[in-house]
Image (cartoon, rainbow, N blue to C red; front, side):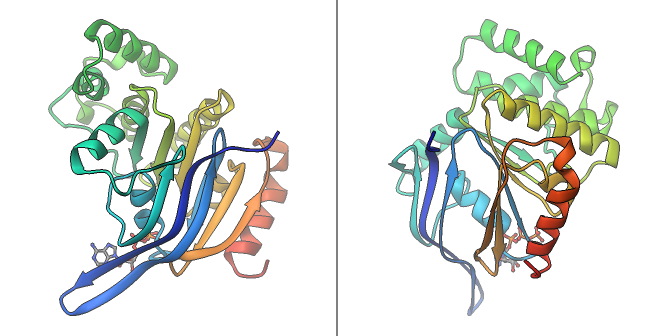
Length: 252
Ligand SMILES: Nc1ncnc2c1ncn2[C@@H]1O[C@H](COP(=O)(O)OP(=O)(O)OP(=O)(O)O)[C@@H](O)[C@H]1O
């Protein structure tokens, strides 16, 4: 079956101005993100990965070019429409986790559900289900600082999922975690994807990148290469690692 593009970027550009200097972080980049895929974006530090993710998810404006989400141009949305889009249709997981420090894990998770105006009873029920699924069901009354980094990141994933987003974006979601917690987070994202959730993840880590159905390598603000795998299977790990290493190191 032919894959459907859920996001399409056409001739995308992002230029930052710092004083009289201009820096072209994304340069005339076109790509497609497919529905149901676990898409991984890799690239050297400063190559433009986060900038790209911000534009694909409507978190930042574009300098030129177009972003289409299910065929609808989102880069032309006004601020209100964009805020609504972000709240209802995408979920975002940050490396720095970004939970509200004086809200409990449960309150953090339910917050975007309440802001979106969903029925409080439904939001609470969904949060309970998500917390159990993430293995943090008994931590609902804890404040973020009373939990581990891995538990906080799992709460952040639950928060990203509370409004049943069409795409979950994750920018280095394992970057601030130890190995064990990182693998737990990757397993959760892989499992969500197996159930049909579209995931777009930026990572530096080749082992994490092995989770990809499709890997897009960014070099100097442009697409430097694409690898097509298929659903993740632990047994393919070594082969995937060496193929990804070849692309990343420029030997592919
Ligand atoms: N607000 C800004 N003003 C000026 N330059 C910026 C700004 N944000 C990012 N840049 C520059 O744009 C380039 C791309 O940044 P970006 O954060 O997208 O890279 P990245 O690939 O995600 O890097 P890393 O892997 O280190 O997080 C970098 O050279 C960065 O210095």
